Image (cartoon, rainbow, N blue to C red; front, top):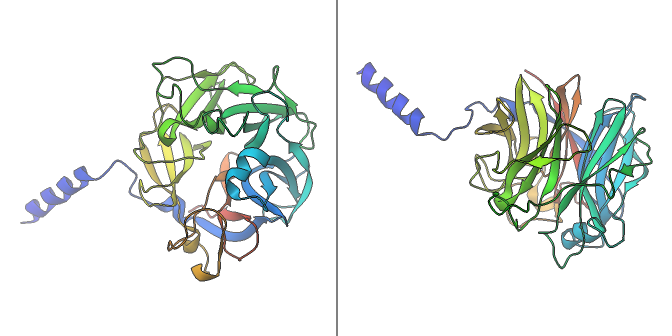
Amino acid sequence: MKTIYCYFFILLLCQLPIYAQSEAFADQWEFVGIAVEEPGYTIWGTSPIMGDDGKVHLFVARWPCELRVDPGWRTHSEIAHYVGESPEGPFVFSDVALKGTGEDNWDEFGAHNPAVHKVDDLYVLLYIGNDGIEKHPSNQCIGMAVSSSLNGPWERVGEDGLILAPPQNEKYWNYKAGNGVNNPAFLQHPDGGFFLYFKSEKARMGLAVSENLEGPYVQMPFPVTVNDRNIEDGYAFMYKGKFALLTTDNHGMIEQGGGLLWTSEDGIHFDTYEKGFHHINDYTEFEMSDIAIHYGPTGRSYAKFERPQLLLIDGEPVYLYVPSGSNIYGGDCTVSYTLKFNSK
């Protein structure tokens, strides 16, 4: 009889989707509180880095909250710089690092969803932009600016900062992608060179590679994630000897509105995943009836994190910074939140 039970148990396991069964990564986050709150501004992507001054610097997408979240981010987003004495803040506004050029080029509008990194002695700021809402979102592209200081000035690389646009090859998976290429995730490869991950057609993640920091970046002809439902907002890092992408789980690969931690042996094929983070409700107590929903559907039973960005110290994740369309404190504008990683 025991043999029969074992047989059916193994058979059941074989029918499960390919994701890691442990949810340990998601369970290790501890809610700290607000990262950035700025009266009059919608706060979104919040990318952290430890400065040479020992302070934590956040690069934050923001725009006037008198505008709706959408389309406000497409037309008015700018990248603001905030500084805190510690990873838990408080964070104080310093300067505006980057805006749309306002000129007739690829990033005329909406400098958005920053990702800040350090390569050797140079700070690198990746972002997305567009050249007009009439063509949006298919006209989204990825740019890069660099600086010797986190306080700027930031100089766009090359002629105009553009490092990745949708492919011209009709055989590529995201040829004429309806959402362009967007939401950069950047990784310095352990063996040299640079990996640039991005979201594109059908909300899958793609990859472009370069030998040199400023490019040219050559896109792979296929997506690197196996998702059959929308994901986005990847953050790329090395985790336990593997390549990792922390993304949202918008439509329930595991849990709708949660997060996913994807892992890969080569950084090119991500077919294994586990839960990356839970709903906000699972980390802190509040009444859904008391929150202010600035973006996303009303009436759902949970509040959702967006655009996860990690603070790494000595290569290990220590803090997570996430915005949300829901202000759990009921404010007039969105805020971003801080969670601490308690490694087990």
